[in-house]
Image (cartoon, rainbow, N blue to C red; front, side, top):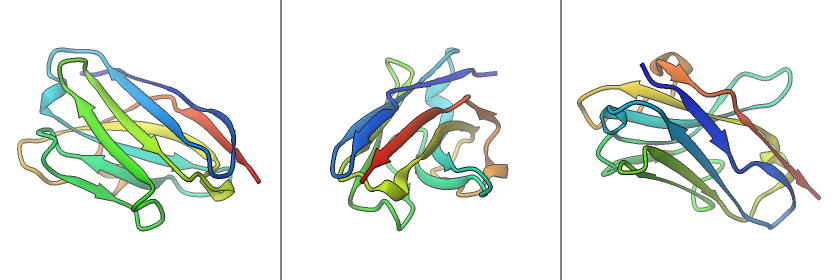
Length: 126
């Protein structure tokens, strides 16, 4: 089992940058594919980005491609989401998720992940 704790959210102006972190407990972090999702009130949780257990593969939602970068440091049991050129429509609660798998696949669906953090609020003002 793994526990996930996000940090790094906040209130920023449009065009600014933020880096989210997701710290994981447990010694098997390197075996987990990691994903970032976001959710706004009344909407479904939306896939933002994912990274394979090895770090060799990444996947992004079209809405963030070219602006967001996902990375991981397995020595620190942490996955990051660097968010640049933030827009008001990026405002959401961002959650990280973990999926135990052996291949390089990265699920986009919520159901593809086994463990979830509580989330961190990101608010982008215009």
